[in-house]
Length: 284
Image (cartoon, rainbow, N blue to C red):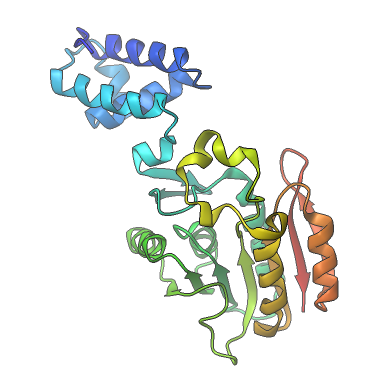
């Protein structure tokens, strides 16, 4: 693309291209792309909007804009995603944190506060970039925080985020609870597993096209990993401990039934901000 005369002109050109590509928030994303291309935040872009745009800035902005117009998620383009109160580094190796997962964090914090112990042991399964466990550790520093992840690349991402945020978390590589010793017990186990059916057409649309399929889809109409965690987590919960699960909007009934079959009590489901049944929990 030709180099616009000013940063404001470059911003307008980016916004127009994103709008023409059908991007839902072209103005916001144009500012984010230009900020990444120039190394300036929104305040600086406003203050220096009349500054001349360099050829290098225009070229970087053009490359970023092409990637976004092709549908690549903003989180991958920027390399970061905000979740809860945290700014997390993300990559194509792991699931992009989503707002609906904050419901699970909210409920886990409520459960932590109701426990009789001052230092609850909390385990997050399939932690990805550390989304859930780092949010919990940031809010309740006294918990003993642990997380597992089967993907080596995602585990490295979680480790980097924990170090950057200064939040100590015990991390290990493993498939759900397989890496745990039989005697390992926790007061809370959280999990946001893959829960989309493998033939769901949404997997071929939007951001999902760029995320690892192993973090999104599960057999048995998306229920296989949920059932596996339900069936194995109870043995690693302390008496009175809780399992909290995120699931699909239509999966609450079978998840509740599986929890009942596995011997959990006080089972309940919470709705997300869109009114969908999104998080279910049960107590040992």
